[in-house]
Image 1 (cartoon, rainbow, N blue to C red):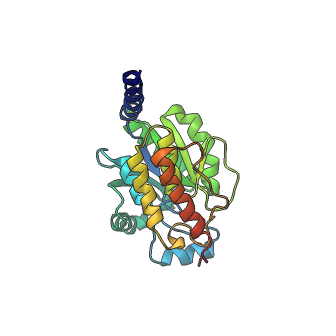
Image 2 (cartoon, one colour):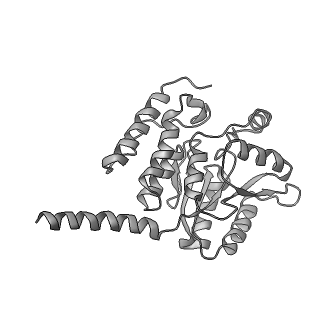
Image 3 (cartoon, helix red, strand yellow):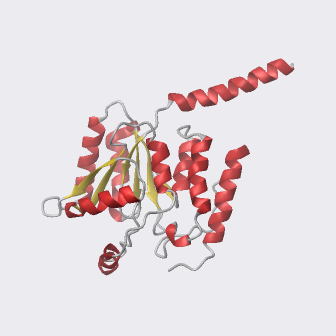
Length: 259
């Protein structure tokens, strides 16, 4: 009986590990403003002021992109942004300084590509076509253009797009096909639940969040700091412990003044 129980346990462990190994990590299609770079885009004046400030990333995002992109051939993720092409050098420098993995940029020519949605959809078609054997996750903010694109992405690309994550910068109702996130940990946790991330990778992203003492580097003043945040339901073991640490830390951070 004891031997049978041990054997069953090994099958469970092996089966769980095998399912993770069998699922190749998805390829990331990423936004930029309010996804990787803090940017208050709630008005033209605020956007203009923010773009003159030193660029800051969101804590945990470099770690998240690194663990998801691990093993990918260059580029390891692609960035599709409505920001103008003349910011190319600045963005490259920012991504390197922030320790994001290798990447390729697709930036918009404001003189000829007027529609942000049309530009992004066209580029995503190119990206998907270049990698017919891959699946993808899309990580954008929850601005108007991103919200309107969600249904188009799922309709045109179907199961090739495994998930669309929208950063809950401003409290809004999300399309059903999108998954909201407050920090990098929420994406990591969803990827873990989908069988595409290992516990140690989840822990790496969680550790970056827990180590951060400055609330503004996760939740700047213009962004939502989640109330009654509880992402740990139905988790057990070390994953539950990791999640609980993040939950408690975010609760403490959201009590801090933000500026």
